Length: 281
Image (cartoon, rainbow, N blue to C red; front, side):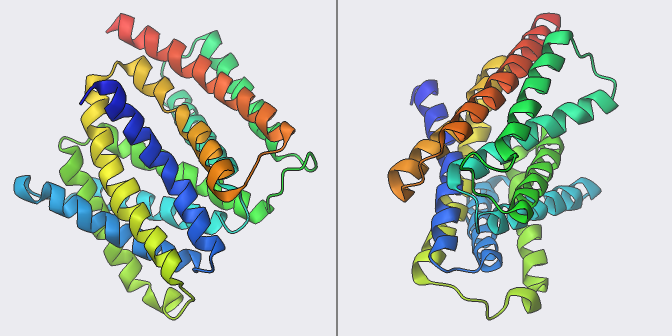
């Protein structure tokens, strides 16, 4: 299958998590139960895919990655109680990129003026998006939860950069996170769940997460650094389009304008910085 088609499929899978989660929670399924079903379904698929070559379950890195994954899953599901699918995906994606950028500053990595300007533009767009008014309906608590989810995903992504066996490690991360959710059963046991919501959670875990991440691991090594970074900008765009088409969630004009600023800023910072790294390697 051509690289372009594989990449497009992986990005659609990633964006589908927002649609499936929003649809399942809107149907009446408790967000915590949704997260439990999602992580268990993802663990089952990733375990099946990685079983032949072994699954990595040991090491301090594994527990840290599983904790970051759990934070992402919890924040992501809970935030979609009020956030539209596209808005949630944009906040998540912007938080991930800004979090990784802040970490790079703390580590003393080289940062040129264009990268600083790009991230400043993205941060300004995100602040404008979340200011009161403008037709953007979002509860502050749910926005904070999506920001927490983004930071969790940023930490998980950082752990994955040094993962020697990505698929085996991901399977281990999902299995450990599933165990953690099982031990926390007193907090979610008996919470409401609908048949449709359970189906959405299983699809999110098994297909959009399990198969989506496995496919992403396959295509990323075949892409240039700059291409991989910029290509992921499509995720919130796809989520917004799918949200409008399937959930009738049409973003107001200010959300579209501020979202464009966020994506433009991240594109400027990511592409420019990745190009410098590529040419200097």
